[in-house]
Image: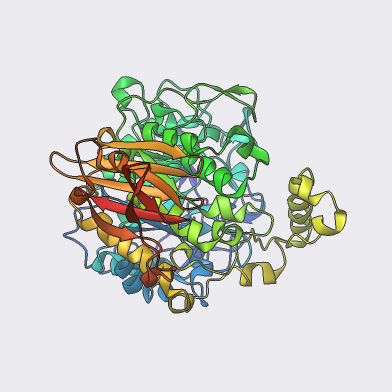
Length: 578
């Protein structure tokens, strides 16, 4: 079937007698045939023919849904392929009731745009408009989203607009304008968002964002590594993206950026020179806390001292780095945080990057004692910022989350070698035998061993109950339901202990997070005033409770040098109401 060139350079045509289910390719200038760059489905993989999909035939049951906001958001990040034994959209539907019962408010799917091979994290996606056939058909994703909405769960989707994967990316076959050597990224040439014919490139990613919101009823998008999206246009692609995607949406949506530069511009309004996103992943809290808990100082962790004071600063100010020189990059990093709301800073104690980019996919609770992990978990869920959980952390999953791929043999060999080279500079891997023990991303066992064991919800019922109780407290307590950062104050109480005080007009909640040995805290530090006694305090949570498989020790009021103090048990988190 011939296609005809329009005045603007776009080729189009009409093929009568076909419809949904038809498979097709485009032959370029009488040469080879390639899949559609905007294909809605690739049933035989990213190199095969595209399939015509009619997005209008699915019967939705969520027509009255008003959407999602950042307010009191708790996100549950998951990888579709490793969450269940089957690793499909449909299998995930069966898990939604339990995820909702846990108390999270939205699931976040790691990228589902189709990729080469049988499994992948998703950041090597090349068919950006096509849900991966590894997880099911497009309507299976719609069934998942529709079911999530019936359980009052929002659905966020991770999308990648900073690069495309190395295998199956055919955009360059259709036009040389999609990529440019004027910008460089960690993956090669940058995407052409600001050069000749960039209007078509900008529309390509904007239309992609609109598709997920319009055709799949997704409630929001998380854009990967936006610090590597380079655009010198007067209106940055991210600003235009969020404006047009919001305009096309028929409900409230949230847009979150992974932004490692600590730039508040990302979440400032476009009218003020910002990009207009709702939130950023605020990694400083995680990094400072991980250094404190594990002592790791490799790679970008070299920027953090891991002190309690540093953790408190991340809580109080959103970012630790606000223009100071970064020892890791030897450049200034970050901009000053002023009155940006708590809802603009998504915090976590682990995510897919911070687990999967470790050599053996270790989760943070694999590296520290479970009682200290319970303290870190309590601290996370006490804060007013949107909290991100990574699948399995709520039951202290025993399985790792490794980096896995299924590339062709030639590319796969390069990926394996690159993975080993990535860690060769780490002191721990100076021994070649140990370096070679790092799991091979191409080994099917690497993927299979990353699958969750969902029966650990029962086997690790203590930590699972802790998460469930904290999420319920977060959603029902009048003080903790607030997202006001100006009514939250974190304070160092010692080398291993900090407090976080939250308040509203009449009530206060005080968290004491003790990562070390048992310690005494003066009563005024907890009550907030020398004229307030311990009788004003009501203990509403203690992480060492036997209910959470703890040792059962609870804080007690005693005297020290004639003054009242409260003895906080070792490696415990306690919450008081006043």
